[in-house]
Length: 116
Image (cartoon, rainbow, N blue to C red; front, side, top):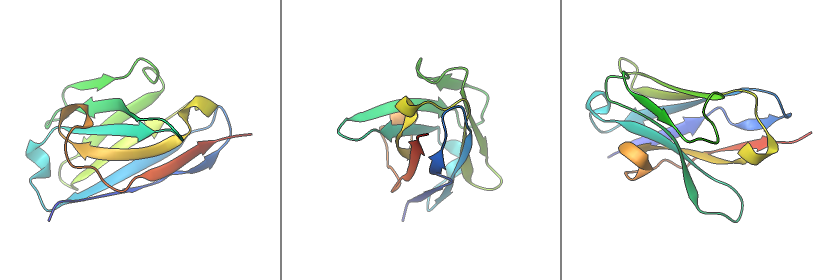
């Protein structure tokens, strides 16, 4: 059974940072590209970032480029997303997903709230 469990969300002030993790199991993590997507209140899913299976290739949405960093540890079956210089516009539930563009299986998500 494919499982993706996100963690690390929380409440942070504008300009702050958070580190998200996604623990994967039930499939061959190391051969799969992975993505992060998010969903803000009342809005649809938005692709945030993706990383190739080896970690050599990464891509970011324009709204987060330069502020977010995606990475992975294939030995630990874990995907990461470092969120820096957060703004209120980043408030959303963040999900990790298999495949590029977040089109595969998604986890349950972790809430990120940016507020003063």
